[in-house]
Length: 122
Image (cartoon, rainbow, N blue to C red; front, side, top):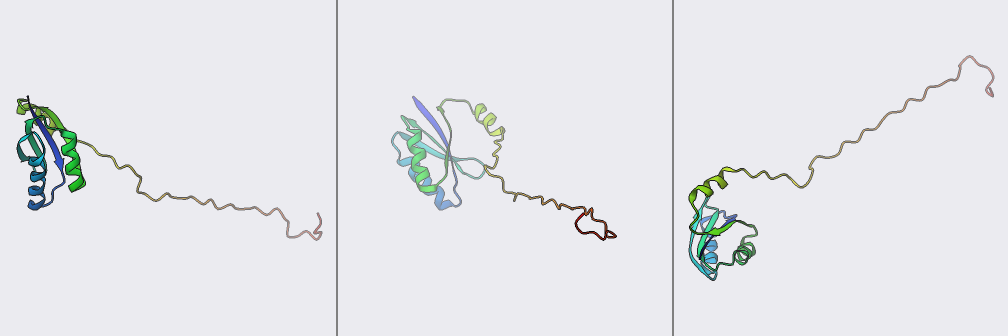
């Protein structure tokens, strides 16, 4: 059974794309590999008996970032791909970058001493 695996890899230049294609084609069971996506940052690999986790691990070792998008049968329709591309993924930051603001309350002490008093003991 033919499998289709789509992996997103951060590739900044043509040299990086060719290295990624060499790694993808060199994996066992791969029959074809193509670049997809707007920035040509997705690798679509088709073949029989592809180990998607191993291929993702090899790409992560070389490029640092590789995300396994989908694994499925090769005869899936292109309609499902367009539905997946239409969904936007929202990534929230895992930290709060603002510096905490501290409020220092100024205490005012009222003086109850009468200045006309001549006795300092009372």
